[in-house]
Amino acid sequence: MVYRTSGVCSTQIEFDIEEADGRKCVKNVKYTGGCNGNLKGICSLVEGMPLEDVISKLEGIKCGYKNTSCPDQLAKALKNYA
Image (cartoon, rainbow, N blue to C red; front, side):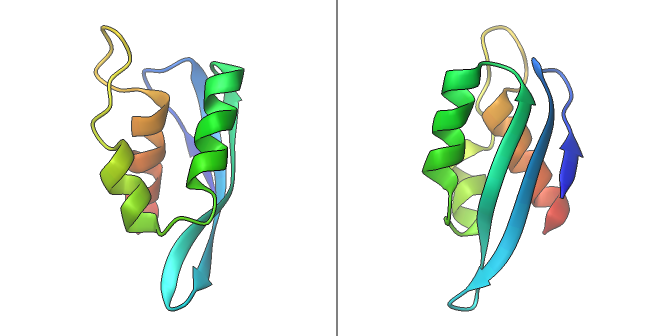
């Protein structure tokens, strides 16, 4: 899946969703643009996590004065998928 971000430094997020033990899990997350090290960390941390867990942990996070963040944009992308 490809999600075009809005309101953040990154421009898009790519990810896959795979079934594991009857749950949809997040795989292969890759951001384009944004804070490279931080986003690599997020990608590593959410790898293999159930979709709903990633959404609940990242949804609503803000970046400075912005109303959203790169982690929040991933939650939005996953909610659109679900």
